[in-house]
Amino acid sequence: MSASATLEIRSFIDERRMSPRQWVLTVLCFLIVLADGMDVAIMGFVAPSIIGEWGISRPAFGMVMGAAPIGLAVGAIFAGSSSDWFGRRRVLLASVLSFGLFTLLTAFARNPTEMAVLRFLTGLGLGAAMPNTTTLLSEYVPQRSKSFLLATMFTGFNFGSALIGFVAAYLLPIHGWQSVLYFGAAIPLMLFPLLYVALPESARYMVVRNMAQDKIGAVLSRISGTDLSGYSRFTLKEEAVAVKQPIAVLFTRAFALRTFTLWVTYFMGLLVIYLTTSWLPTMMKDAGMTIDRAANVTAMFQLGGTIGAVLVGLAMDRFGANRTIGLAYALGAAALVILGVGGLQSAWLAMIVGAVGFCMSGAQTGLNAFAPGCYPTMARATGVSWMLGVGRLGSILGSSIGGVLLGFGWGFEGIFSALAVPAILAAIAIMVNSLSVRSGQAKGSDNPGQPARAGS
Image (cartoon, rainbow, N blue to C red; front, side, top):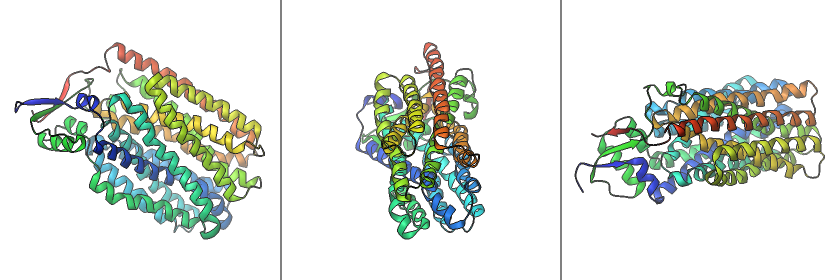
């Protein structure tokens, strides 16, 4: 092999089978997302106990419920997108350590104000973790199975949210709400040393940032299990962009429509998911259910979402992303109407809640898997981060408005039937997004363009 041989990274990854190190990376990203899902959902399960112990109203506790989503939005937009400048690995390590520590400190909060501040700080770390796991894994898995692998990784979020529900059902009656937060903090803090040792930097990112050839070769050789010492130059063929700032890419003519529709879709989906997971346990407890029963039923939402994510990912690789995600949101709207009409006394409550989770969380996970492919490497983390950050305004609204609607006298039927509207809007937005994708394909935007180079 010539000492000046060139290797194009995208083709190299797409043409090979997954190496053991790529599977290890997939598991590590799964574990990060699992810890993220636990700490995002944790307040929904402990809220009834805290409200009872502190003797505060449900609308007043909405400040605490909305604090983490605000932090998530800020963390996603600023800390998440910073990895396009500072690297995926560095930002991921900081985010996992951050949300683990602040979840631990939340257990020592003495009033709603302190808890809201700590949940906001927790949210900053949580917000940075999600876009960077998505971006890092998407840059190391082959295109032919990318949707399925990313969707499978994201089942960690659903599994983590379900796990903390079952943990809460066990710990709350015996050890109180603080013990649930201790558990939620322990997972990311124990995970951090493993990530520090085993988490790689993205080779695609290193090429775009024009890092040294030997460093790129060493990382790519380790992750692929292949000797690449014969290559002196690494390139990355993808669409050329006319701007140099990652944030500016999102609003160029080629990407503006897909950016806007991704934001709308994510906003609407999170509004539904967060209102459901944040307030369903409280509404069930108010209806006379035991707290462990309420936690277990709510956990069915996450279990349904886990199954839905895998099947949506498989369908995306086979039938197309936009069509599959749009159908899942539309079916989620139908399931929400059935849930609202059936009411809390329905014998099928747990199954219907699981169906809502299957459709809504499955669609949302599919959207997470789909988004990285909408942007070039230089702006990938920024594009995903801003989708998550702006979309998280929906989670803020969903987390906070539940208490307000209950305070206004809205019942279970009215709240959940009304949630069908944002679900339908999400379905419409993702189908409009397909127009942008098709337009880009027609202009060759998804075909290799001029290569980015490093070490030349």
